[in-house]
Length: 104
Image (cartoon, rainbow, N blue to C red; front, side, top):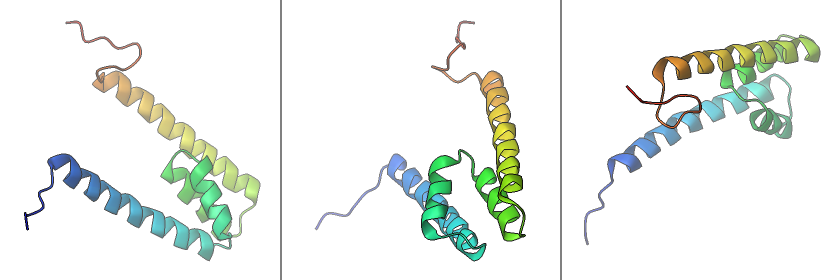
């Protein structure tokens, strides 16, 4: 029987999958512990862009904060992370990025 070999891309994909899976399990446990139903935790994962926003929302809800306060927290964190992303894109100038050319 031939030995299974994994490419570097496969190994990287598996390590990222493990990290993201553990992150998701943690978020789900905290969301249910804060009083949300499983479908509500799934909806948050589907609708919120950043993990920081998700955990911020759950933190406020878990501390008996109002849903409006939780949503405001999540929006502020998401906006902050979007601005970080824009700044990093301008700084790193990845190939194929809109508005960035590699002509030097």
